[in-house]
Length: 105
Image 1 (cartoon, one colour):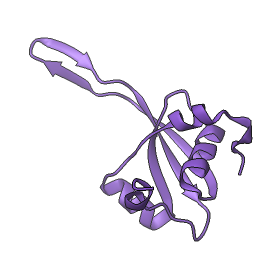
Image 2: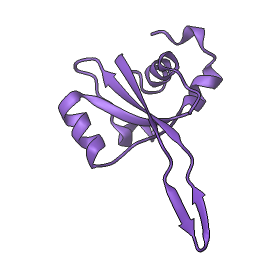
Image 3: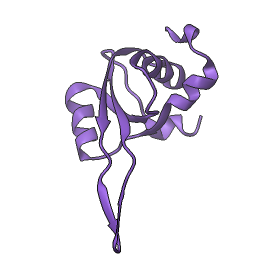
Image 4: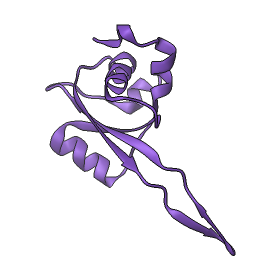
């Protein structure tokens, strides 16, 4: 595990939430990947170290995508949601993250 070069406090703030959707469950089944919403300044090595630290699994690779915020209307005002970053975390063969178990412990 390569989380020695990052501060533990920083790694705890990298992952914000798991992304749970139809596409996320399809990707999880087909490619053994888990999708997380991550801090917009997080790097791939930080994301890998954070997942390994928090879930005690081996991470094979990380792919990152920037999601543009949608333009929204509030009456006559036009606003915009924030841009955010999501990470596709590819787990090593045989590894699995079960969110219902990890929240309790």
